[in-house]
Length: 206
Figure 1 (cartoon, one colour):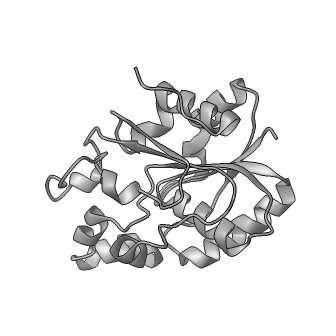
Figure 2 (cartoon, helix red, strand yellow):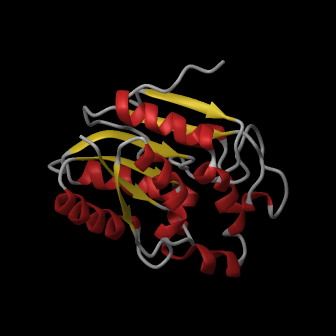
């Protein structure tokens, strides 16, 4: 299986996944960018669209960044007939998001979050029940918009705290010194993504 479906995060278009897609392409993967209006519709609507898109592609690996990871999880748990290979989450706040809750304290912040706001407040099911391997990549370089109102408690990537990325049932998690958005242009992140999508294992850390 060499196809991989890439899902972007909130507020950005699918084109932001292009740098990661280029590196995956160089490693032999056929990349399909899934685009969706992050703040305009609830998670379940995005998951429904992703499931339809996945069925049109056929059996594929999945990689989702930030909110895109939640869309991937929801689609695959909700539509268990969708054929999947290895599944990778990049900086996805599965257990809710401190920075998002802080932003939602302001009216304009709730507007910016849109229909995604409940996810940052409550998270989603942080349990993976499918048999396919799930890998989680998290960052610990605190550079990102989540620090707009001050520092985030604990290890974080500037938007998502390390503890917010943990999924019960995940195969493995790797933690890198990288910021939230920088994950998409990082060669180290791409190398780990290639490793997990190929072998369901991350590269060992030196």
